[in-house]
Image 1 (tube, helix red, strand yellow):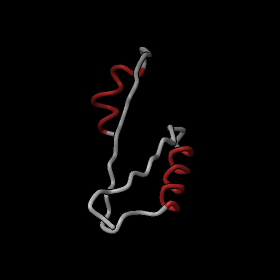
Image 2: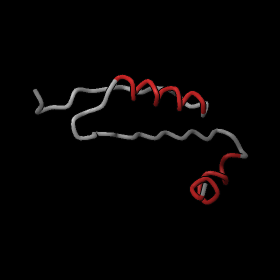
Image 3: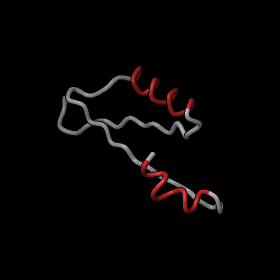
Image 4: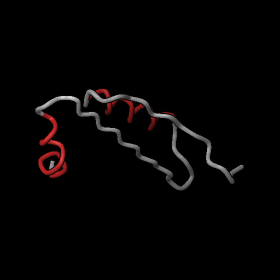
Length: 61
């Protein structure tokens, strides 16, 4: 909420605002398709893009 109030609110009312965020999650042992699905659902509930992608980690296997 602070980020919105201090940074984005200045531009949100005039239009043309685009926010892009990248989150990299690398839990020890990897993750599951189930967790990726849950994440996509949570993003949809927030009306955000559900562009979740799983990439194989190097050095395993």
